Image (cartoon, rainbow, N blue to C red; front, side, top):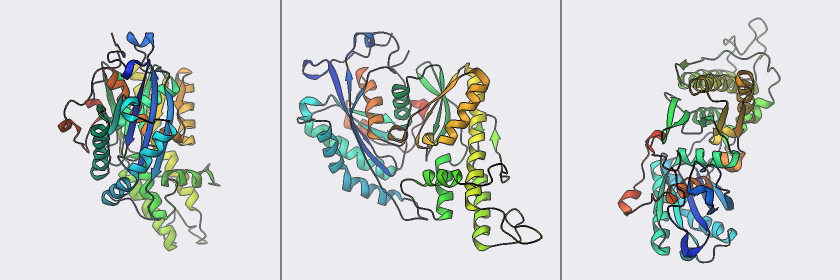
Length: 386
């Protein structure tokens, strides 16, 4: 039996307040949430229905010039420069005047992610914990995405598709673990689209993947896809070969290489393919692979729903393709959130961390707050679910 009321709220209140700090990549997020202490959370699996109230959700993104990625050193510098200001903004918006009295727990991303940015945010979390005498909880970034998605959508009997810049996984819950059924063997889907955006030298604001999506929507030849590698290996997939192939096509297009018969007419030398066509074909190919392995996982666990989490989960075309599959196979449905919660944010870390804290699991010694770049989803013991 799960008892989410294991630890009482501070100062005799009937609610919990959590501060969440996220900084595993180029997004720095700070969020404050509130859980009301409910009688039904003392027993049963109600971790997806905590009636969470989002008091603040502040985010700042480190954006690099077109054609460039973000380096760990520079990203960490951005986080160090902004974290105090973002924390102050989040507390002010949440109307937290006395953190020592008002905040029950501080939650931070322990991993996975980029080492230097993770370290910068962990230092800020430790500092706040010591100053305010508030307990700490280290959170798995992937589990944060899942728990936020569950709370916002109220999804049940679902397979999770976790798609972001650093991760691509198909997940299902079983026996207190989020079990990974399939994953990428090389680059993540978000990283694949980001790297292609760098080849195209399109802007990184608001995000490279979003700009790829907009170009794909403007494709005028959606009925004729450019043939790309399709690499599904059992429950896993590979995207590095697709990226290398479409990168070479884009470079030939920029060079005007008329020997490439995929891009230029053999007889007239007229250009047949546009940048928009390449973006559309890349999306369709990658998303078809994701749909295939997700459907296979659904069949294995007899699920009727899909919960899409992670930054790429806000892509409307991915949601559309996944929704069509769910409808065709089991009259199921897709659950997804918008960019406020799909893209990395502090609220998701607060949500997962507060669930963990309410089960009595929090940091007893600062040596347990060391961040790690490798922290798999299935390493976390999910005590707050039956």
